[in-house]
Image: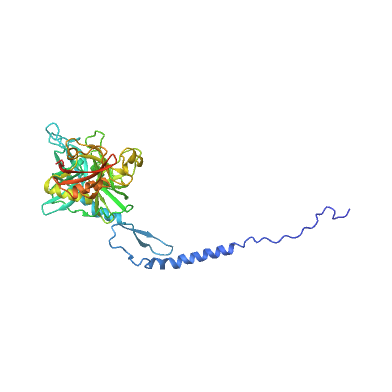
Length: 419
């Protein structure tokens, strides 16, 4: 046996591994990145990147300064603008939003939960809502709030944003629109809200709600969201009998509106009033649905309450709903409507002795026109009655009953608001 008997047979040589072939490109990339940051970033900071944006916003309401120390260099002061359009708008509008305290007399003297003076001459705040200063002259200022905020008050107190308390007089209120107008001394009033247009708002645009949720402890609270819907109608049951007495036309927003926000301002990003916050669907399964009275609907009512102290409206005396709220199958099966009818309002009930009752209108009749004006929704019906007609006007109503088209004439009655 030879000396090489236990030796392994020679193996073919393997090609050498290229262990560090990736290292050089990475190092070059790091070096280039450092050079870019060192030399290019200062030039970018000094460049006018946006032609319409100045290097420093002189209207900023909140500038923060940060000290930065670099190796071998002195401290540098870097200005960071943290202001936004929302903060500017809120700062501008908040002084026009007030608290409204509803004070009621009990047991022939004024009480408060915790007496300030320890005697019988103190007061009790039964409820606190919000309001908006919309007008001011040399002697008086005028506040719009909700009817339900001041309902039943023996005394009303307005609390300004600086916590100044001013006695206010109720000029008039309206149950159906949920609006009320107050007058007070203008001496301490510094801001009046700018009136915008609710008809021009678009679904999805920003909306800001300002008010006093849960009382004056959280006065001037701000919530932000978007316009979720326009021309919504929400049934209102005033006497709590389970049957709607009215349908309020509202703007829907997801900006949080809680108890105490009622009467406060819903504004757009320009700081203009577009709605009066009024109500919130308060159900455990529903969040992010708040409502406001559109300002274009509210202003004529506000003006009438201010000058006349009440709202006098023409009325038919019916409880009506839009056909779109009824399943399509019921249009033919229950209402017996011909297929040519595409919209209208159906009568759920007719008030005894009302103009509609005296004219012979009945439950389940479907109104499609009033004096030639198409009626496709409750908004159309109210627009015809309240914008185009007066109390005592004679109108011709076109309606369908059991599939047959007919017309009837009636004289509009009078419906007064609650003062």
